[in-house]
Image (tube, rainbow over all chains, first blue to last red; front, side, top):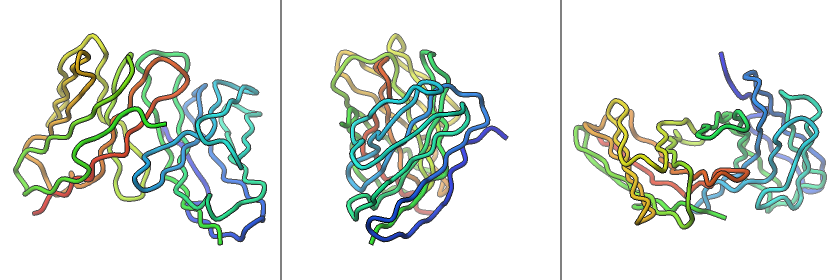
Length: 114
Length: 110
């Protein structure tokens, strides 16, 4: 089944404790992206990657890191999480470049930083 | 930053009624897409309309696009309780990402 898999689904952590949210896709998509979703703000892009070893900042990259060493994986790293990073996170992927591409989303990771 | 803005923010209707949601955006686009999100879950792609199209249908979904007004609407006909979800428009301007609005929360009462 074509899908984007995120783990974990839920995570509660303490301020300052490094964490990684994994994202993997099995569709051979070049493009992958991380979003955070907060009430009233919609989805805001954190980082994106157009292919292996090609990553770039989105609208809200502060406090986050990513890597793209393999085509299928795009982990999101919070080196020192803070409470304002409490949010619902989504990974998405698509073909690139391609006009009219649609995104396939993961099921989300609900992160709480206390 | 957001590009699309959905209207209304929330909509409550009875089963069998039609639901109409609107999306306005600010810059020129290549295409506009609508996604659906069940509570706390990932977004699912519903339909895409290109900038040179004015109307598109998919099952009970009808999407219109007016590029002169920079707006789109999503119509769900004969709604069902299972249509209860949040609906987002996303604009693709051909740059590096799509811009999502804050969504319309649709509740369909049985």
